Amino acid sequence: KRAAEAAERSRPAITTDGHEIAVAANVNRPDQVEFALVQGGEGVGLMRTEFLFLERGQSPSEDEQEAIYRAMIEALGPRPLIVRALDIGGDKQVPHLDLPREENPFLGVRGARLLLRRPDLLEPQLRALYRAARAGGDLSIMFPMITSAWELIRLREACEAIRIELDAPVVPIGIMIEVPAAAVQAKALAAHADFFSIGTNDLTQYALAIDRQNPDLAAEADSLHPAVLRLIAMTVEGAKAHGRWVGVCGGIAGDPFGAALLVGLGVSELSMTPRDIPAVKARIRAADKASLEALARRALEMEGAAQVRALDGEAA
Ligand code: PEP
Ligand code: MG
Image (cartoon, rainbow, N blue to C red; front, side, top):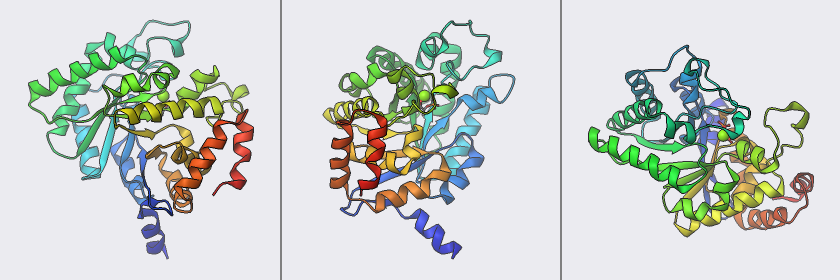
């Protein structure tokens, strides 16, 4: 029975009309990969590297980082691994970095903004990633909190300089879409990014002006709010103009109804906490994409998140 369950989990998520959706895991450490694969994860869609810095009192060296990325690649074999460059700031503060205190850290020097100001953080991480990439595997690099194309252009230049210096292979470079400006300007960004992964946790926070950590507002911070869904639809449309793929690695990707809606909006990869994988795969296998597209079109017209959620019972 257990073998049958494992076989079921490892089957791909293909809709009844034949569209395959990639289902990946959000994983922070090499020792979490095995469980992700057992759950049916087909790769890692988001490795949050902040934890390498948060879990200890000092920054990991370039060599230490390389060893960790290599261990991830080894654990995954040929499966894809998307490593997100350091996303410090906002809810992820690292005391030993001694960064200036900010009035509004969520609107401050966060993610890519910090990386662009701190080559001493960016460059060792990129060097470690490119050194690890020389060992093979299917590595991609992803930058968090991108607002404008110039940030991505500068970060790509930093990647390319290090890649050439290390004689490392070209790896795809993608970005998180988690600032509303980036969703609105997805087409301009898609000219410079190899792929998008939508961070619906932050995208929801910034679109709805709701602190993602405020428990009083948790019920209102719903990523299925039609305003957020419209930003996702704009992201997919912008990506399509340049033939880029779009994934979602925010929490809503792990909600079976949310996942169904995202597929209907044209997302082709979903990355989530490993324990959510089996239910999401089952939901996708039970649906046909044409109905999910119709569902998504209806959801975009709803007046609020509650009305979108009420469509669940009717959905395929
Ligand atoms: C997100 O914002 O949705 C996301 C996946 O990134 P994080 O939760 O690490 O900010
Ligand atoms: Mg985020």
